[in-house]
Amino acid sequence: MKKTFLIPLASLALCACTALGAASTAVGLATGAADAAGVAAPVTYANHTTIDEKAGISIELAYNAWYRLLELAIDTGFVKPANAARVAALDNKAYAATLVAQHAYLAGNATSFRAAEAEARAAIKEAMGLIGKGT
Amino acid sequence: VHFDLATAIKAMQGIGSVALQLPAVKALVDKAVGGLKTDDQEKARDAYHDLIADNADGHARVQDKLAKLAAQARG
Image 1 (spheres, rainbow over the protein chains, first blue to last red):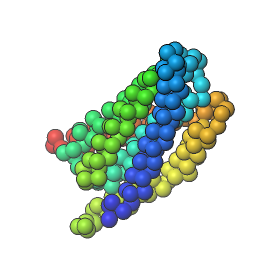
Image 2 (tube, helix red, strand yellow):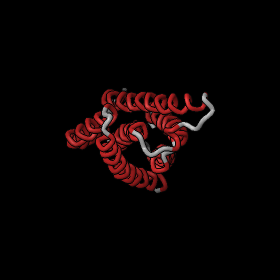
Image 3 (tube, each protein chain N blue to C red):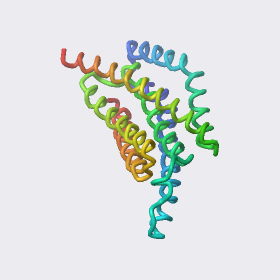
Image 4 (cartoon, rainbow over the protein chains, first blue to last red):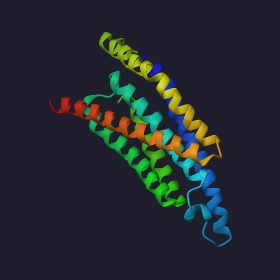
């Protein structure tokens, strides 16, 4: 029964992760083309572009879906007290990735966006795996 | 799946708390999706900043709840 209502939220979190991948691909294509030409990618060093905001939105959306799923899991007794510290550490890891992305945004550094996206995706996936097992 | 009344009650309370947030969540997500689609940097930036603020609040809230759960485990 518990899994029934968690599935839509889990799908939302996974969709957000997919959006995350699409945005990071856009960033990667922009920087990759410049790398091939042997020059620094404009998106890496120039002032912010909409790609910066879109990559940031994708990462934040993935975390947003994740924390809402986690909060519902906590509120419904899905997270056992014995595992709370472990889940908290994974949530911190995922949130830290959003902070890295925010710093990358402020610095206009596309490479850091890609690293943050990978961190966020890994932490959210690991934490969702815990909830899926009835943590 | 084992049925447990206490869990069912918690589930209803949890769903209730999510349902109360739904209009605000929908508005936030709609704005974020709009930010992904637009070429208007101001709109995208505004959506990004809204998400950052909401995530900061949400992160603090779940960490607080998890800390209370962890304290239960320690007895």
